[in-house]
Figure (cartoon, rainbow, N blue to C red):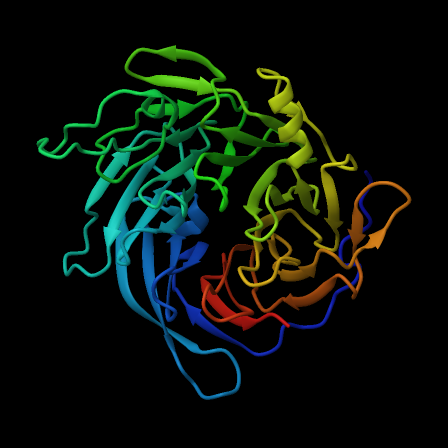
Length: 401
């Protein structure tokens, strides 16, 4: 599908905002604490992440009166020898944050400790780790994706009563079909290696502990069901590659994805074709279930594609659904803007998805950054409050209208 020139329908400005400089560190992603309403963190890298060190900044909010968003201040900083590309707060421990490094490592930090050193360290990827996502259904596991075209997933087996530390609960189908990160494991047990290019993003379903979606540089959105038996090959002691239950050609390299917590099997993607797309995968997954071993496929303008939001001038680097409203979606782009969309307000075509490009669907634009906007997150506690970070070495807080 040919997209119209970017900039169509600029939308209303997002309104007042506050900024926090992070000198010398380009922001790569921002995430709000799921436990503290006044705390967030930013993963950053020197020299735009091309070479040099990185830093995890833990940020606290500062109330500035009734009008406008709160201010920000850096409470803690954790330095790394390589740039940081992503972060994820633990869903089980209020003071733990995992970070993704350019050297292929993942580090776990406890922000309550005086010593500025990681409490866990894994090095399982061969190239840059670009995405982390903590499972918020099974809160003791997380996943990572990398430029090495793999997704690493693992779980820690539960201990039986009376067993010594490190002894695992034995046997059963459950042990064989779950493969997820766990902070207590010293190394990765299994890798999903069925991608053919960089895996820019991975995200767990908010409705199922076993559904994991990925965004890949080969132009596809993939959905993996870790309960399925579609294990394609395995090397003893290393793990197996798993076939997806759905493969969706998106258009352009897929740089980001996010699940809608209110609408089951609904995801959004951002890609290099400048479009934000919404997908309903229920029919594709049902088709895959009826034909085991044959992953379902569908693409843009097909029945799975329910909406296309257009207006960004360059690649869409980040998408995030509102945690408070099912129809509200935010996006961040290399065009130095972040935008908020009403995905239900697009124009209906004769056939195909809703198409949004004008003021009905584009509800706010934040264009105060002066470099690529690559990180974006909604506050989980204050409706409509958005945090963004960019390569201009600043984090912004602003209110989506």
